[in-house]
Length: 147
Image 1 (cartoon, rainbow, N blue to C red):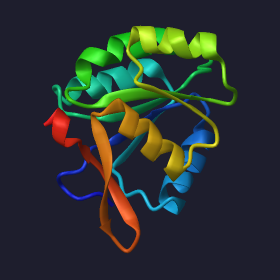
Image 2 (image 1 turned 60 degrees about the vertical axis):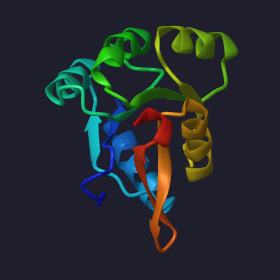
Image 3 (image 1 turned 90 degrees about the horizontal axis):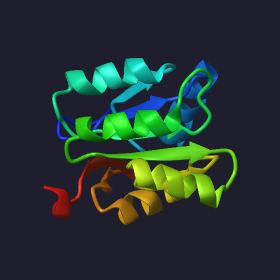
Image 4 (image 1 turned 180 degrees about the horizontal axis):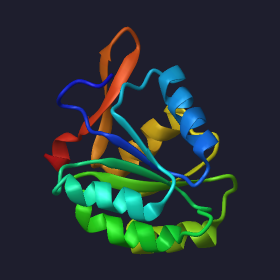
């Protein structure tokens, strides 16, 4: 599990199986985290608001049944503190990627999400980085420029 200074990872995906798979992928990639998964964007937004501006790393599935990923990204932005939000999708879609960035997403990852893809996306965001914690493991923390 993540240490006290780490940033929670929040997943928004309407498929509960994806929560399990995503968590397993992060663990297999050596990423330590405090994980919170939500099937409904409204529930994730309520959780973010309860964090009162504490930084968070939010990953949102682009295809949310009964939800609007673009609206969620826009609404979640003010709740992230120094954190960041990104989108993951099963396919590259430059037009949709631009729409996601226009409403506040700082990265777009094509599944499967891997350590390398996450490290690259976070490095480009400049807000959160993965810091070595020993034994080949990493944890999400605020980047020096975001502190």
